Image 1 (cartoon, rainbow, N blue to C red):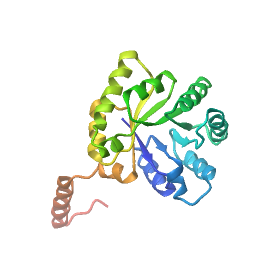
Image 2: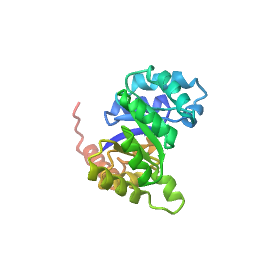
Image 3: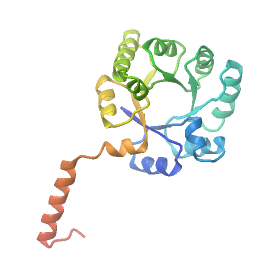
Image 4: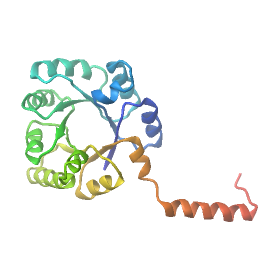
Length: 217
């Protein structure tokens, strides 16, 4: 499974890139607005830091303006992935951009039928929002499973990008089902490494080593 971080925080992205565990970045207008900086400048800086796809979202809702915005965004860097809403205009824009070889991420997916349309439009990624479905008492993982089955049935190349990931249990469940990517806050990525028995074991090793009076250096 690929790990993307869902943030516009440059420091967080840089720290995760240095671990070698990060495969890409997802952003949205809301995340970048929190930085208080120019939208295009932030996207360009993220793309320069990250080694994998960087999803940059259009804000237009009509087809023609989406394409104009996409043209500006994809000129920022070669690893820019144009993020588009799952609407008919968004799908039309996805088809046009994918046909030109531009990476696309169709976002705000809440049903398997929507995911099927995105795959037919040639999306590089489909972003089902599992946490938001859980919030309204629907099963986000059931959606991931349905999409995985449909895509495998027809050998669609679109990658399933589990989004709205809230905690490590979401990551584990999505990985077991076969999601290709999980995008999550930096805190969730770090939490994947945490376990109380790991901490307890390290504490014991440190105590025993101190008692030995030895040094490696």
